Length: 282
Image 1 (cartoon, rainbow, N blue to C red):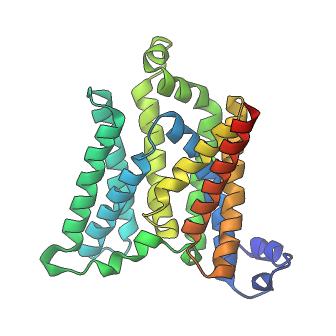
Image 2: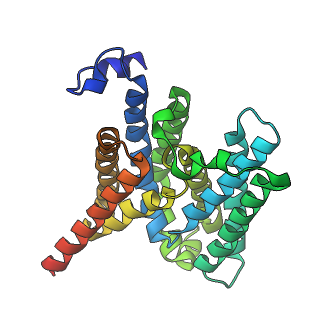
């Protein structure tokens, strides 16, 4: 982290002065790690028509946090990660063996998770207000340990994407064709749903439950307005998420607003600009 602080000290901002506002410098590093990860995963979420899946995972993560807090765990986020991973695996299992559409199954899981979370959080007359911070999030509270963990996840996802991205997209677009070519569809989809579950759970306290879904949908949705092939699709999604993430952090600092909301709105602008430009090109 000392090397990172030395690099940030070179930036022409008052918060970048040496030895000051380490929370802002941590937040910037968190954005640089989180946003490319969200941009990469967003391409799978959009292509696989799982736009509300991250929302359902956020609800299950909230339930895990509530369970961990009631049980007196020093690190309730650990319980949230475990529950989200179990939730993602169960969703993949049910989806592969049900005739219902994906959005219907997501709706079932999402409503169940949020109802269970609220029930547990308010059990015995408990107050829900202590969980309000997870609704909005606060990236300024990110710690170097959390950033390091997410950086490891980013490295793992990047390697998996280089090795298995073609098989993943084929399994999403045409599962039967993928299966006929020897792709283990359920296994590879389970792997990436678990990755999404971990990322959503860890990022929940940074950006908040209310906007986490938009950060996993908008980069990929906007990139489809610009991309002409799969490589451009990934590139525009990652770059869009990264640029909007940095600008959103700067906006939240100078305007005193929520970082997650600022990033989400900038991504929405990115989407509509692409939509208008693509419409004119036609």
